[in-house]
Image (cartoon, rainbow, N blue to C red; front, side, top):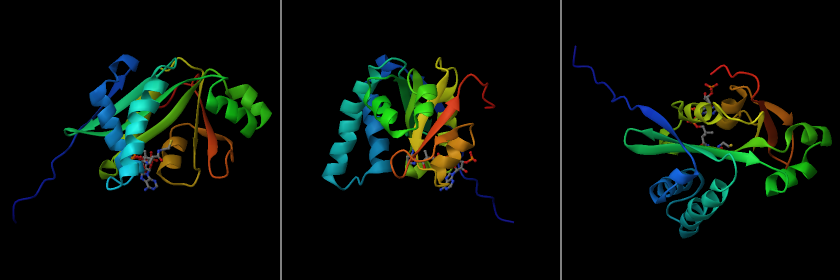
Length: 191
Ligand SMILES: CC(C)(COP(=O)(O)OP(=O)(O)OC[C@H]1O[C@@H](n2cnc3c(N)ncnc32)[C@H](O)[C@@H]1OP(=O)(O)O)[C@@H](O)C(=O)NCCC(=O)NCCS
């Protein structure tokens, strides 16, 4: 019998960052993951979009109350991130939701919720449970009573990720393809 080949085990660690810890290095990492997940690194417009996300959207969102960012490191690479903040009436998404979701859902859920903006894993590191780790760290210990996000309820990775962790579809169609998901944070999570 020949020697067994063992794949190196790469450990993933997740750390939590507040607004003051979002520095240049963190922004560059976010831009890299965003580009790998949503863009084409060969296209200048994709690179610009990723830089705009990291240098403009992130600092703007980081100024909002309740901002929380989680960053995953696998081996020596940043492999994913997730973030959100306290959603309030008067902000774009909350006001938009007020017109897009049924009134009873809006009354019960929208305003002072934790708005989970995105969880993104670099395609090179997917399918290893990293999004699950990011999710659990992001929602653990939140001060809000409830959390909201929008994603496609298509049985893909995102839908599996959230429905497996207590999120429920509270409005099945808010913009044609996406559903509104809610998570009751007063119920202790099983994670
Ligand atoms: C969604 C995403 C974050 C998942 O990242 P990941 O690290 O590969 O996910 P995990 O390995 O932690 O798996 C999460 C769940 O999805 C399932 N899953 C993973 N890949 C899947 C696939 N290709 N198809 C269906 N389910 C899949 C896993 O089985 C797991 O389910 P479980 O908790 O029931 O076991 C990643 O695909 C991504 O970055 N997508 C683009 C951005 C996005 O859509 N973000 C979510 C919108 S808010």
